[in-house]
Length: 164
Image (cartoon, rainbow, N blue to C red):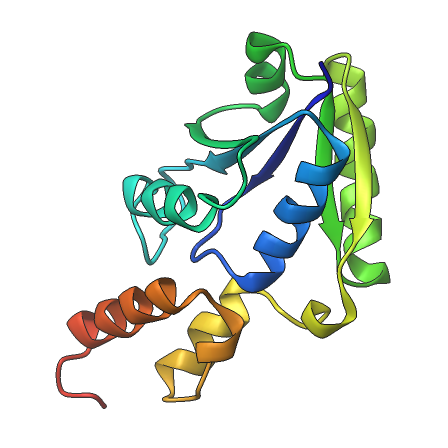
């Protein structure tokens, strides 16, 4: 069985993330979407919220599961017998960083990294950019699943009830 992991913070999950997951689901028998939990980083959504949103967003994919992890991704892979990491690349700048990570991961465990170029319509898309634009009232509804957009709008309103 060919198994792979699609790791990330997914804060929040975007259509770009889902494009990579969908494409990975066609390449592998099983795909685990691994939500990184780093307690030292401030996130808009809690780990449980991000996992819940991803589980809902990944329901159309029969061979995709979602799990959280702390620590090293290579330990997560080793513990689950996963030998392939799938990473989406938006631009050359992503490649520079992801290549270093792939080489480090390969030095730590028997894992290979597969790079999947992002579909052109998502090449600019990043969770951080979506949050920033939404914070200032920009329309990001076409960049996220509808239910994620609703949760994003509600969360931002909770953080700034006056709408300033």
